[in-house]
Image (cartoon, rainbow, N blue to C red; front, side):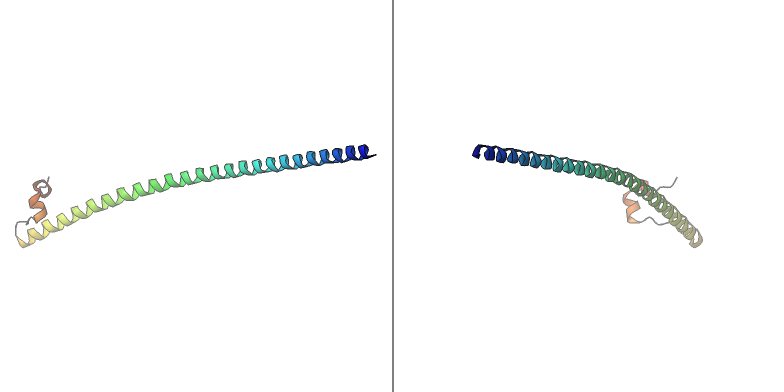
Length: 109
């Protein structure tokens, strides 16, 4: 009888080992599926962030161009005001120190 009991215990231990192996395999498969889903979600998020970055870069370039044009317009307007005031006062426009040190900056076309 002890042989039959031992065989029964070994069979039970074998079945438990198989069940434990199945549980481990299922847990591993679930973990892999979660990792794949997380990876896919992160890829999608990266794609959205890249689109947003491109959009922001276009906006920054637009702001840069707009401010550069605005600055040029201010300089032109200040030159016109300076010329008009000089014409009213009847004096020759004075060159400031910056335009004296840079002769090309003071010349007008």
